[in-house]
Length: 479
Image (cartoon, rainbow, N blue to C red; front, side, top):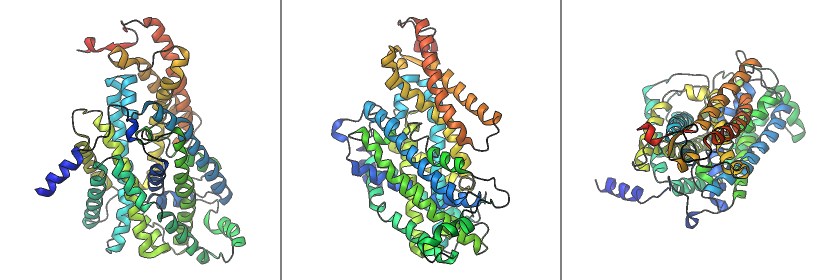
């Protein structure tokens, strides 16, 4: 009881400014963001994503060039779009969208976003569990398995989920400090594991590497049942696998604490260490596993093969440091639905839901597809919020329309979001694309253009008067 009382006292004293701008006294230095983004993007899921390029038959040249350009574009997306929006408003994407769209749309968006964050975090927990399972000699699911393999493995999931959820309840500061503790040494483990396995593939010198890479790692030939990845798949995936965070502006929740918008550059540490070096290293490990006859290795098996118990510990911690901020974001999203409920209580509930979802290995096996659908839904909302913050004042349009007109539904947002998702999905089907990520950019552009156009028409029709019959459904009308 004493421990429970102490826990409540600690979390009740945490103010995350869910429905107000972060005050200047609470902004953080650059180091806080380097640690957090490094911890989040040097993740256990790198042992899932890196092998995907091997299994899908990407060519070595396409992998290196695609990752180089894609991660550069991702970094620029944080620097040029997400961080400036966050620093200008000092609010979360969820509260800012509520001010723009009204309660009606933000309720739908927060529900979808909260669930999607839960699914993402559940994949991280599943990856960590695969490593703990090897330590305890409990067989976990492989990369292609869709169902749990044993009750003991489910028990591991619940134990890991409990730790991650408790850390997330303490807010941004504790999540950031947790990441800073572990971020420095995780890249060393990834790099060392990859290098250690190269001799088994026949690499005896630096000059051997690219020849072996083309012949035995990224051969350009997919394994049976997998589609082929080209340069465009690699580049677009590297750029947009986190598009919900940068183009979709979900990381406003993080960068609203930044002193300057240039702190978005911190994302480069996650992109070029986690999404470049770590994907390359885990791809090497996957190639060795395939050469040894392992057709369905788990992330934990891949890490153990390259770095032994240290590799397993790295996978566990990498899963934690990614799931922590993801559950934190999910808590903020759901808190927008229940503003009178304490954020830490919501985060506990979100953590429990995430842990239950983690019991299904399908979220790890289908991670690339899930992230693609996530990008398709989130990108247009980011474009809408960006236009409202930066473009509307220049065009003489009213920003934060729903807040100023006291409305619950901004039709401009509803129209543009719906048309963007439909239009981008149409592009996906008409051009017979095999990758949802290809449709995220048309979705973002459509969101931007349709929102500005719809707002100009509807605000003009309403005459920008207090009677917003054409633009919005008012609170009085709703009641």
